[in-house]
Length: 124
Image (cartoon, rainbow, N blue to C red; front, side):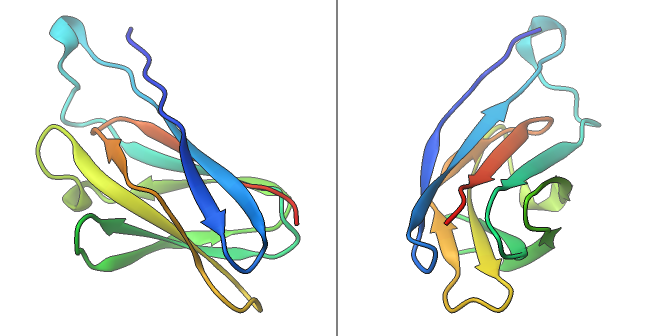
């Protein structure tokens, strides 16, 4: 089993903090990921506001809602398989605070089918 980790900063414009994305992937024999693997996003929302979470394919993709990350909890969401194209897809994540002013956008991160990406939203 092979594990990968990548850290990406997410500037929280309206919350004045920073968050991080990382990913872990496991590949099958020969280093190729199994096509039936589910790609997930784990949101560690340490903030005091619930967040609507979206994924966007880079450079200019459609914003797709993944779900709501409740404040002060860890929420697991599935990234739809049709968002991922080819071996690696560059994605950005948007955390839009419910009742807040502005959404926050992550830097782009390369995601492979079967990865688990972690988005950490720090407390204010």
